[in-house]
Amino acid sequence: MKIAIIGTGYVGLTTAVVLSYLNHDVAAVDKDENKLTLLHTRKSPIHEPGIQKLLDEVWHTIRFTPSVSEVVPEAELVLIAVGTPPKQNGEADTRHVEQAAREVAQVCLPNRHYTLVVKSTVPIGTNQRVVEVVEEVFSERGIRGNISVASNPEFLQEGLALQGAFYPDRIVVGANSDKAVDTLRRLYQPILEQTFDPPTEFPRPSSYHLPPMMTTDPNSAEMIKYAANTFLALKISFINEIAGLCEEVAADVTEVARGIGLDARIGHLFLRAGLGWGGSCYPKDTAALLGVAAQSAYDMPITEAARTVNFRQRERIVEKLRDTLGMLKAKTIGVLGLAFKPNTDDIREAPALDIIRELLSEGAIVRAHDPIAIANARRALSEEHEMDNRLYFIEDVYELSYDTDALVLVTEWEPYHKLELRRLAKHMKTAILIDGRNVYSPEEARDAGFHYIGVGRV
Ligand code: UGA
Image (cartoon, rainbow, N blue to C red; front, side, top):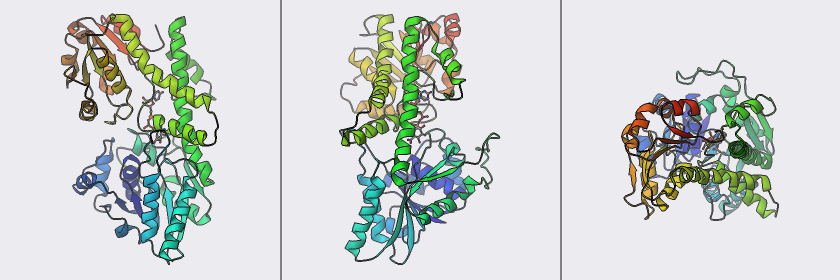
């Protein structure tokens, strides 16, 4: 199938290479010259395990271009995967989605049918707005175009994006047109029936079952995306709230999570207590959902509380440092992990950044490490003038630990699971480990000489 994808961010690029791997004829459009320069030299602009290799593999078939008019007229299906950044008030800004729809309608041929699919995460009602935009352009052009609009939300997780794209739990399609549903069913047929040869790095999990394609109306599809992210966000906030109480009553939240997770109705996933969620999705999508609710003057206290608990986790970790070290002024704190989660260089809404900002504002000296996100964090923090010469990025964890007053483990990167704790403790001024992701067991850390403080366990 001939496909045009507008936007080559996480969602757009992942979708492009995966659909190309599945033998579709894919052209991806992006206006960002820097991204295109990288893509034209066969380099992935995003850090995502496996994406570079897959891009190499499909290189001879996939196309990247800045021009909608070059690829849309001949496409059968057009996917919109552009950003929906937050506005000042938290609502999602759908300007880029509408602009993409407008550009598509401007260049599509009057005598051809197109399926226009919105993959971006958008407020409820956006598909309807896209239909209106397309109609407006058709009337400006004085043509009777033929575009079916559908919603097809994306559920990929950064760091696991390709795995999720090849082996999704479900595919959700919201459409009022049978033609659009049929086109999307053909598009995803290799995934729905698992008829493709898996890439070497992404073998089909033995327990994997064929995914359902759920069809519904566009508003419900848009709501499914927000509701799914908000539910996962509040599941994490719930266990973090329980973790706080575990600390008060000397219970162990990892045991509690294990115990409740064994109930099939609860499930064990997304019950890891720690520093809570960051990234480009939960913070933005929970705020956007509240924005949608506000427009209907509808209160969502559960969603509000999930956000409050989440951001409180960042403050609590600094409180734990204060409780242990006293004043933080002139104390040297090592921060392990800057990315919002492992296997990505994405630092958007990362807990580490807020923690570093707070430490610096209290006069501490910060030494920070991350396996791959240092450059992004340096860029983000150096734009803030108060980030003076008390912030250092250090490439080696053992060097970083030298003479520090405490270490805070913020992101549970794989290399941080295998640290030589004794060696670290020996180098430090005071061997304090604040384990924001419960990577180590308290006994193990204490045996190595650390004063250990985790989340939700004593
Ligand atoms: C999330 C959803 O998982 C995807 O399904 C969705 O498609 C995506 O948002 C999106 O809307 O684009 P992502 O933000 O990449 O994906 O990351 P997650 O793996 O869900 O983790 C989010 C945050 O929750 C991370 O900061 C992680 O450290 C934290 N987390 C996760 C916990 O604190 N505890 C857990 O048990 C699980």
